[in-house]
Length: 82
Image (cartoon, rainbow, N blue to C red; front, side):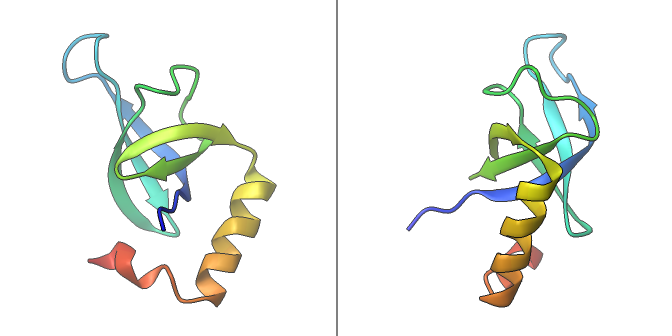
Protein backbone atom coordinates (compact mmCIF):
# COMPACT_ATOMS: atom_id res chain seq x y z
CA UNK A 1 0.00 0.00 0.00
CA UNK A 2 1.24 3.49 -0.83
CA UNK A 3 0.96 6.22 1.74
CA UNK A 4 1.27 10.00 1.67
CA UNK A 5 2.52 11.64 4.86
CA UNK A 6 1.54 15.17 5.97
CA UNK A 7 4.30 17.63 6.77
CA UNK A 8 4.86 21.37 7.09
CA UNK A 9 6.99 23.30 4.61
CA UNK A 10 9.84 24.98 6.49
CA UNK A 11 11.75 26.45 3.54
CA UNK A 12 11.62 26.52 -0.26
CA UNK A 13 14.56 26.56 -2.65
CA UNK A 14 14.74 26.87 -6.43
CA UNK A 15 18.02 25.15 -7.34
CA UNK A 16 17.39 25.56 -11.09
CA UNK A 17 15.97 29.07 -11.26
CA UNK A 18 12.19 29.04 -11.24
CA UNK A 19 12.03 25.72 -13.09
CA UNK A 20 12.32 23.45 -10.06
CA UNK A 21 11.13 24.10 -6.52
CA UNK A 22 12.24 21.92 -3.62
CA UNK A 23 11.14 22.23 -0.01
CA UNK A 24 12.44 21.22 3.38
CA UNK A 25 9.39 19.59 4.96
CA UNK A 26 9.08 18.81 8.67
CA UNK A 27 7.40 15.57 9.66
CA UNK A 28 7.05 16.02 13.42
CA UNK A 29 10.58 17.48 13.59
CA UNK A 30 12.16 15.15 11.03
CA UNK A 31 13.26 17.20 7.99
CA UNK A 32 13.13 15.70 4.50
CA UNK A 33 13.30 17.21 1.01
CA UNK A 34 10.26 17.15 -1.26
CA UNK A 35 9.55 18.39 -4.76
CA UNK A 36 6.84 21.04 -5.12
CA UNK A 37 6.33 20.46 -8.86
CA UNK A 38 2.71 19.30 -8.40
CA UNK A 39 1.74 22.05 -5.93
CA UNK A 40 2.98 25.35 -7.39
CA UNK A 41 0.71 27.27 -5.00
CA UNK A 42 2.46 25.84 -1.90
CA UNK A 43 4.32 28.30 0.30
CA UNK A 44 6.36 28.30 3.50
CA UNK A 45 4.23 27.29 6.47
CA UNK A 46 1.73 25.28 4.38
CA UNK A 47 1.01 21.65 5.13
CA UNK A 48 1.41 19.22 2.24
CA UNK A 49 0.90 15.52 1.67
CA UNK A 50 4.17 13.96 0.51
CA UNK A 51 4.42 10.67 -1.37
CA UNK A 52 7.84 9.29 -2.37
CA UNK A 53 9.48 12.71 -2.10
CA UNK A 54 6.83 14.61 -4.04
CA UNK A 55 4.26 16.93 -2.46
CA UNK A 56 0.96 15.90 -4.05
CA UNK A 57 -1.49 18.30 -2.39
CA UNK A 58 -1.80 21.15 0.08
CA UNK A 59 -3.93 20.28 3.14
CA UNK A 60 -5.16 22.29 6.10
CA UNK A 61 -3.40 22.08 9.46
CA UNK A 62 -6.20 20.22 11.27
CA UNK A 63 -6.42 17.50 8.63
CA UNK A 64 -2.63 17.11 8.62
CA UNK A 65 -2.59 16.77 12.42
CA UNK A 66 -5.37 14.15 12.45
CA UNK A 67 -3.52 12.07 9.87
CA UNK A 68 -0.21 12.44 11.67
CA UNK A 69 -1.76 11.42 15.02
CA UNK A 70 -3.28 8.33 13.42
CA UNK A 71 0.04 7.33 11.84
CA UNK A 72 1.72 7.67 15.24
CA UNK A 73 -0.91 5.42 16.82
CA UNK A 74 -0.38 2.64 14.31
CA UNK A 75 3.41 2.95 14.44
CA UNK A 76 3.91 3.93 10.80
CA UNK A 77 6.21 6.89 11.50
CA UNK A 78 9.23 4.85 12.53
CA UNK A 79 10.33 4.52 8.87
CA UNK A 80 10.68 8.30 8.52
CA UNK A 81 13.70 8.30 10.79
CA UNK A 82 15.65 5.97 8.47
